[in-house]
Image (cartoon, rainbow, N blue to C red; front, side, top):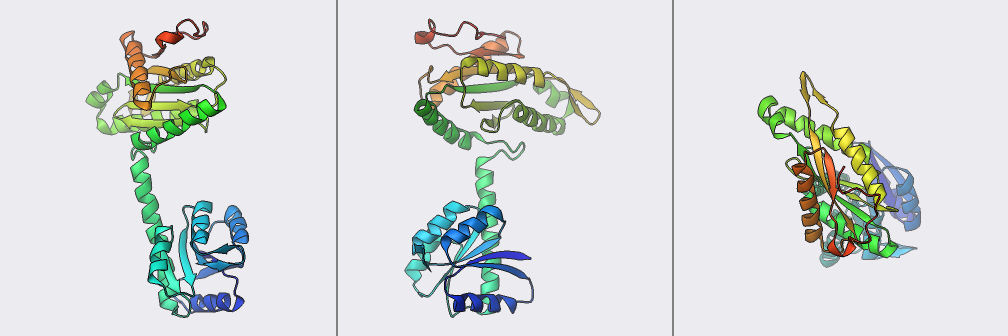
Length: 312
């Protein structure tokens, strides 16, 4: 069953579309009809649809803006424009604005419309898959380096606007290489997946956990009241990752070294913040691992909270 949201203010055109799809025997369509864009948004908010058949001339929406609004309301849904205009330029612009196809009213044989819906859904799924692969780590499902940088830039802007500190953690697993060398890369991959799960358990939903590559991870902590909040998270993480990882008959023991910098106390660009967190992480690793270190900007030495440790 393919669930369709038909957004069409002309009752005759709406009935014709439903009759055309009823003729298609290979698949069944469940059609919900609304006549206003605002009603479409309400339905999308409370139910799942596979595709939207969208008229470009509605009482509360006209032209390409309807496509943009629909795309903004639900970026993952396939959109097929139904228009009374046989305009190739408009059709191209509609696709560029987020539609998967553009069909002209009155030229909708059952096979053409049904196949267009199916192909639009598949194209949208392929698009979403490519977007996912470009932004998320395939092994762990965590945010990857590219999306991490984008999220960090946005978090930095929010931090200054809301005047709330932002914690940036760089994590490197301790004793992970021996796991790969003695137990094999398959076990190592399973450990990395479990590490990702434990890291998520140690932070809030608003925080970002990313895999930078290999056994290196990063975390963005937002909406903090003070640096002590970061210390609590770091303690939680070091304790969690110190617990054994059981993979079938193998038991892996690792740890984690964490470098931390706090923005905007450390008021630099993304690359400098990562360098500072990286340097702090290596200090933690040099002192035995399973610990964390804060980067302290030279001009903040005198104002640093005394209860926030340099090393745990």
